[in-house]
Length: 200
Ligand SMILES: [Zn+2]
Ligand SMILES: [Zn+2]
Image 1 (tube, protein in one colour):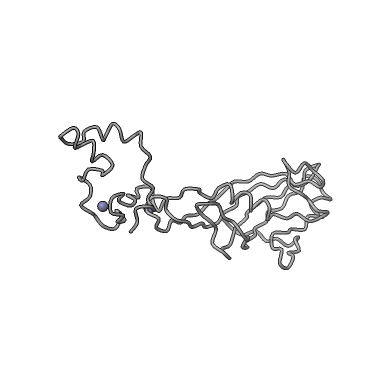
Image 2 (tube, rainbow, N blue to C red):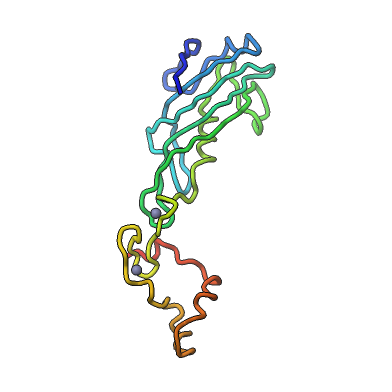
């Protein structure tokens, strides 16, 4: 992606995502490519977040349409969080396509605000990141998670717990007098052990 010079926009100190669009508004049908890299505060969901001061990249084409400015492009950012299986660090990069209409005094449910001749790309970038941040990230797709018996990280070491019967089924095994065969069929009914609870 080659950066496009953006001579027409006055960037506002402290508001890096604000773009001046007076020229665009004067000429319906005109368009301009903008690239912005800046941090956005408080980009977090319950499972992951964009690291503080990490740059959020917005690459967007601004098009002057009869009722405002149409913004189309991509929002990308790095994210990090805790793997839901092993609780180790998980990280990745999101890249979200956006296509939003910005109008002055428009419907806040369906459009973003245009304030005079200023267009603020930050709300668009913010919302795109929040929607895309993973709620239950994985360190990698094949993560083996924590052993529910002893709590070791099974990506890092192997424990000898596997053949051991689940203690919850101990009483049944005694009643039946043999190996707890029922365990496989019945285990679907019980809740999965939560990884963090078995950590020692
Ligand atoms: Zn993991
Ligand atoms: Zn174990």
